Image (cartoon, rainbow, N blue to C red; front, side, top):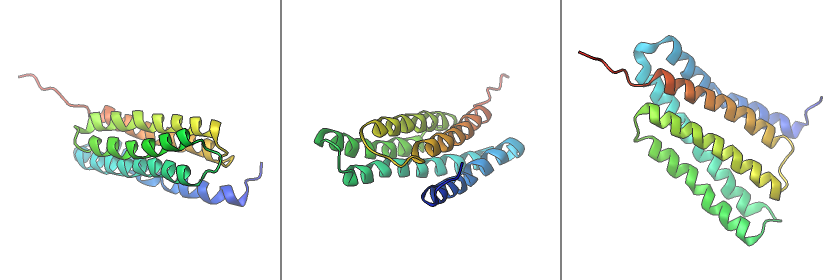
Length: 154
């Protein structure tokens, strides 16, 4: 199946955007003595990307013509929530931050799917979002597992 030129750039840029997640997760797996560093890199990048996903909805709310006033207002409200949740994740222990971010990446995908029901999105958008969200969530869940607190009994 040939991919249109319009879909090629977002796809490749989206996949390039996974490099920090794959790299930090891999380093966390194989370089456990620096787990806090790799966890910080992973969480910080995830915060940036989750904020970006919220910003997409701000742009959609501004530019999609066929939205009702209520849908447009709801999208503006939703668009700031990912940034606020992401910011809050920075103050949590890494394990909880990874779990919170994982849940919100899935929730953000669900919001994109809902948007696709009321607005015309490019055909490549939701399949790409699913793939990118899957990799991000697997990386964050792996980190949550590997960074879980170790309880030492005396």
